[in-house]
Every structure is written in C-alpha cells, then in structure tokens.
Length: 188
Image (cartoon, rainbow, N blue to C red; front, side, top):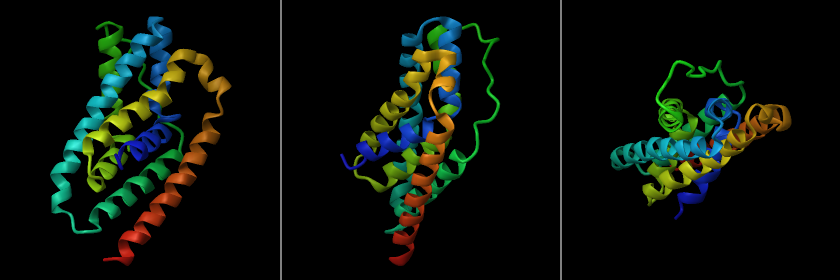
C-alpha cells in the first residue's frame, strides 16, 4: 500500500488545471450529464494508469538500486515544470458523435495517456511494491481532481483559483523531485 496514497495525491495535483479537467467541464456542459462524464473519466484514468503501472513493472527489474528513485525524481520534476505553464489549447471534440460515455472516455484517455500524471504513476509504481495500488490510487486521484470541473462546468475556472493551485503543485513537485534526485544520486 506504499504506492496508493502517493499516487492518489500526485495524480490529483497533476490533473488539477490540466487539459482533462478543462475538457470534463466542456463535455459535462455539452452532454448535460456530469455523472456520465465522471464515470468515463474514471474508466479512462484507470486504463491510462494501468498501462503506466504495467510499464513500470516491465522496466523496474532492469533499473539499478536507486534507479527507480531517480526515475521518480524525473517524473516529479517533469510534473512540476509542466504545472508552471497553463494548459495548451483544448480540442473540444465537437465532431465526435459516439455518445456521452464513449466520447468522454476516449477523449480523456487520449489526454491522460502519457501526461504528467501517467509519468508520475509510472515512477511511483516502479519504486513501490504494489503497482496495482499505484494505478488505482492514480485513477482515483485524477477522478477526484476532475470531478468538480465536470459538476461545475464552465463556472469551475471562474470560481476555483486554478492558477494558484497549479503554482502550489509545481512548488511541491519541484521540491520533492529535487529531494528524490539528491537521495538517489548520493547513494549511487
């Protein structure tokens, strides 16, 4: 269980103010079904996190003793750096005509696969003992961060101080990343 809580917190912070959160607000407004969008977000987050955890399980046996810690440090530094910049322009998937759940799940999976939350999940799963716990924690964390945007729709970014939270997350990620890097490099 050493992976569940760190993955949950890291994924929630990484997903906050990012494109999946913004897209959830757009899709909930478009389909008028925030519950369906939230369910699709969880399915997409679980799929993306599971792929990251499986990848970590394949790579971690090849890493030296502190290689997993250094990998986690890189993931934290990457998440911190990306949190400093606003999310890029959003494709609102207007032309997608597959229904609320399928459209939301596919669009979310495309955005989540390979983003900073997935990279954090990879790093945490590579370092931890239970990669499935990292995948589940990350999926719950991303869903928890994205659900309020789906429930509030377009009002979310007007009410919630997204930029301030992203800057706070960036400071946490960068600090933790530097600390992990120093820990990994001092023992090599």
